[in-house]
Image 1 (tube, rainbow, N blue to C red):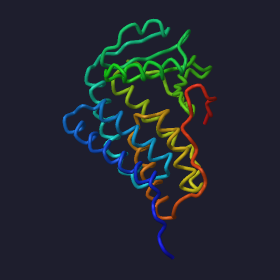
Image 2: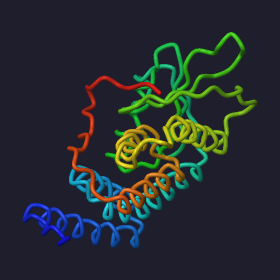
Image 3: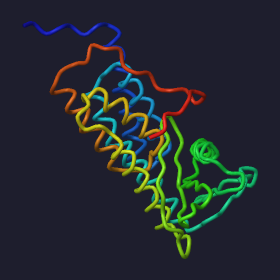
Image 4: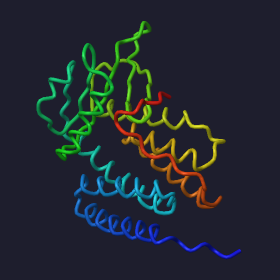
Length: 237
């Protein structure tokens, strides 16, 4: 069977992604991690809309590395702040922030993280909800999906505690997937989860693996699910 010829639009899209990734590679080598992350995210979204799973897979490694460096810088800063109201986040400095009741909710944490990225400030943001009757802290991450875990309150807030919480959120996001679903379906779900829990290395790797699987099984002729807008209703998992 003859191979189909790529459309002019697909070729243009591929060139655009490749150019963006060349710039992202240069930014990563110069440790301009926020620039690298932005370029990778834009390239990933473009490739996803075009079901270009090969390029999606290639984008994920530098994206993962840029985020690892950002997370490391935030933890190494050693600064830990607690906010009980989003109004307290008047200025942003490198470090870790715990947002908690009575006035902070998951959306506030997402907004603070996005603001820190715009200001190119390495920041780890964790949001907890009211303590349960069992004495546990519900931790929530909000995005296109909503992820929750419950943890024991720490004796002391440390950067390592924040990193452990990020791991737990990412693990929960992965565990919510249906491993029997088609690769293209899992890719759409993983894109939502990666937006919600971006600081989890294995989540990047699971998405890359799903992209490689999609390449092996062939293209999905169905129209891909577009990225959700911020004001669209979240899908809790």
